[in-house]
Image (cartoon, rainbow, N blue to C red; front, side, top):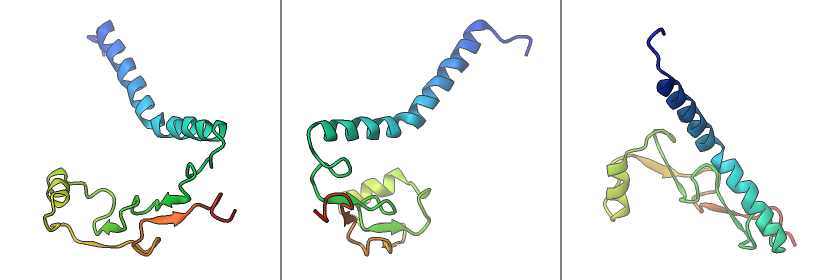
Length: 109
């Protein structure tokens, strides 16, 4: 610890700040979008679409067998181009493979 320079300490501080910003970005984004929707008179949850994406499958309808940490960029690219997936997938049990739900706030209205 004796040979740490001021620029290394500043770099550590900036890196820590960027990491905190990256972690907080989704929460800040949802807060801003919710306030914009309410100021426009729209539903805060869905923006008058009357549908909300499933939180388990992220609106796709299928879940990878290895869980959310089975990210493989080449396999995902290959699958998006129409190829057969190499990772085993199964239908989402939370949304019954639909990928979305009716909005709980505005669909009952």
